[in-house]
Each structure stands twice: as structure tokens, then as C-alpha cells.
Length: 586
Image 1 (cartoon, rainbow, N blue to C red):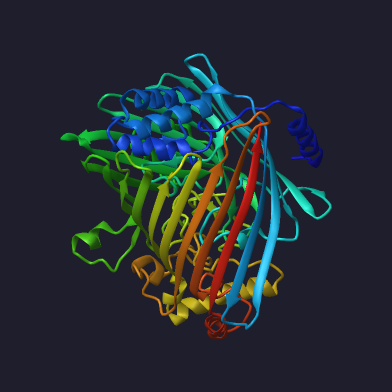
Image 2: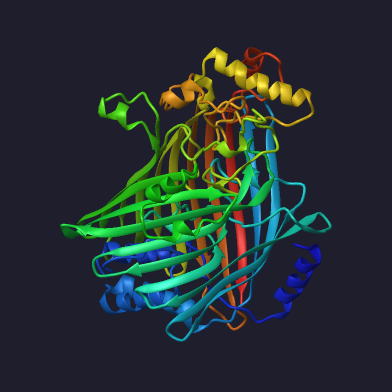
């Protein structure tokens, strides 16, 4: 985007009477916490699996709760109705102060890094009769250009902003577009959407192993049918392809298609969803829009497209409580598993947990879940980059098949070879006040530490040779989603990576403990508008920081020297993240 366009949009923000609320755009909007709670209590029989929902679906849910809910839920539903539907034209600006106080075991010094961000915003939802709606969020994210946003986020937490590095600079600040929008057409049971937005799947509110609502936004289309017995969902997006070595450079012509079917099992208390995803690129293949098994479609042309499939089981044993388990399978060695050999190729992501929303309570949601991602899940070396004529990859090749959009995982926010347990509680003890607490414990290790000496030497030598010739690294060796299982020289598999599980069996494991609380208070609306204030604090302790740094990046000719240096740089860190913000809307 030309920088002059950004300047024009800033002027538009200041001169326009804009729109308020964004429930139909943002899958993390407060409405979805309420909606899940209302479903657990039985007011709503079932919710669509893809978030966000069109306005007519949102309206139907709210009106149902107003009719059926207890006093707390009816009051919440009425407030949500007023927030979303009664006054559509508003403009807002948010100003946030961020601070990170860090203590590292490598130094006696305490580092204190802070910045102030500002976000002028236009956001809202517009109904056009009963069948058509349009929601959008348009904003400018302003941040100090010499600071790194990731410094103010706890480990493995995705960014709140959908911004690109194409800023207009004013003094010490960089201004970037931050926008999402979505249009919907249809009834509450049958609809299509088109938009540029984040998307969530399934019951878990702030995470998911196949479509994470905190992942980077993407342009896409959805088709949803929610019937009395069978529910069907089709989703298609265009993604940004990153380089095979994980460096920050992107190209178009990468696509992600997903479809799912949900049915009740014996009783309405149990539902089972089967889903498939396909990541493909260098061409647009409309056959992946057909409601047929992707494995069969892929087999017709013998493509190397990246297929995943899985099952989501949801069970409500008693009112207000749900147990959900989502199992996504990337690649497995079925023959070994049948023989009860589990030290084999098992590429899977699992999320299981309990969701609880008590009746007649100021506590709105309690969530306890566990997520596991085995080594090399989501990663996929793009076979089409290797040819017999070149007999090698190089640092300029792009990956059109791994499970990322612009370098960000579309699934779990934790990398492969990790697991995480999370407990979160949201309460609204008094009118206008929202309290959220979250505690988590994460483990992660670099799967390349399990390679044999010979394999480590091959990886390091390839990176070293490329560096010496003036190129970039060929292999990503940081244990991220870009770290994969094939050799560059002949397209064969790295045996230890391909044939063995090696889940958290490495010598050096990174442990991350996090505990945080956020308070947000919205003052009663006055003549000049609405004010709200936010304060948050998160404590984070990390043991073995550096496990997720490149291990064999070719900085040294000897793999042993590179590995020893990687181990020597491991250390512990204490972080204290503070956040204070104010928001005004009119």
C-alpha cells in the first residue's frame, strides 16, 4: 500500500461519523464469551463452528437469551443488544501504555522497556434488512518505530494487531493500517460470508489447533449450513507464503481450504465433527471446494498438497459444563501404531479441556484446557522446490504448503514439540467491570537436538556453505514451524526426524510459567460519549530461554561448536508485563 493512502485514511478517521461495535468481525469480541456461556446453560441448542457470526445469527442468539435466560443472562443479553444494534455510529481512539520489566540470569541489570501506542478506530456492524450485513474495523496502529512489539507480549502469544511493515512515520512513531471487514448474506441457518478477518473454530474461545482466533487475518470465504441434524461448513482463504528457512519475506498464490460436518451422537448432549484441511499453492484448485474427501481429490492428480484431518468431540454431561476434545492429524505411521509402536511418525495436535459457565452468577466463563503439538506438526517442506536438475534447495525458495499465513501458524500458537496447560476465568462482579485471569504452563524443546551427529553435521554444513557463498541459511533450526524433516541435497527424509516421535525427549527443555490479570471498566455513557479504562499485569518466568533460537545456522564450520554455543547461551528470564489503557468512543 502506498504511504499516501494511509495519510488519506487518517484524515478519513478524523472527519467521518463512523460505526460502533464489531461482533460480526472479531472472533474475540466479548459476545462470543457470552454466547458460549448461553449455549452451556442450554438457552441455545448449538452455535456455528466458525467465528465470527453474521449479524442475523448474533441477533437471533441474543433475542433467544432475552426470552429464556435468568436475570443475569437476560441483563447481559440486553446490554449486548444495545451495544451492537441500538447506536451504530461511533468513532473511537485508544491510547495504551506498555511496559516490560525484565531480569535475566545472564546479567545483574534490570531492563525496563516501555512504549505508548495509539489506535484511532472506526468499527461496527451494519444490518441491511434480514439477509445482508456488513461489519468492519478500520484503524491506524501507531507505535514507536524503534521498539519491537513482541517485547511487550508474553511468550507464544499472537499479536493483537493485523498490521504490515509499511508505515508512515511521524516523528518517532510508525503508523500502520490495522483493518478487518466482512460481509454476510443469508439466513441464520444458511449463509455465505466474504471478508478480510481473523477466524476461530470450535468451542475454545482464545485458541484452537486448526483455526486460532488470534492468528493473523486473511481474505476468505465461508459457506455455512446449520441444520436440525447435520451442520456443514466450508472455508477458503488466500495466505501469504513465507520462505522455507522461515525468514521474513512473503509471496501470494498460497491457499487454505477447510470443510467440516457435525452430527449429534445418540443424544443432543454429544456432537462429533469430522473436518479436513488442505494447504496448496502455485495454483488455485477449485476442486477443494467440492464437499468430498480431500484425500480422494488429491489422489486424482497425485499432488503433494498438505492434507490434515481430524475429529472434534463435544460432550455436555450436565448443564453449564462441556468437555471438548479436538484431535488434528497431520501425518502418522498407521502401521507402527497398530503394532503399538509409538516411537514413530506421529504428527498431531490435540486440545482437550473443560468449559464452565455457572447459572445466576457474576462468573461468566471458566476454562481449563491442555494443548499438545508433536514435533514437525504443521511443518511441511515444499517438495516442489526440490528438482533433480538443481538437486538442492537454496535460501530463496518459498514454502506454499506449511500451515502458516505470513509466517504465523493458523493453528496452535505454541510451536511443534510443545505442550501447554491453561486456566482462565472471566468475571463481571459489578456493572461495567470485567476481570480476566489466566494462568498457564508451557514446555517446548528444539526437535533438532535429537538428531544424530551425522545429521546435525549435514544440516550445519549446508547452512555454513550457503553463508560462505553469500546466501542465507537453507534450514531453519530454531524448532519453529519452519523446522522440517527433509534433506536439501536429494529430497530424502532426515531419518531421526521422519521415523521417530521424540516428543519433549531432548536434553534441554524450555519451561514457561505465566500468570496474569486484566481489569477493564466501562463508565456509564454520558453526553460526550463513552470512556473505558484497562489495566493488566502478567508475570512470566522462563527457564532455558534460547531453546527456540537457531541451533545449527552455519555460523560455525563445526556443528559441535555451533551446538555448544547454543547450549552455553541458554539462560533464565523473569518478565513483568504491565499494560494501562484508556479508550474513548462517540
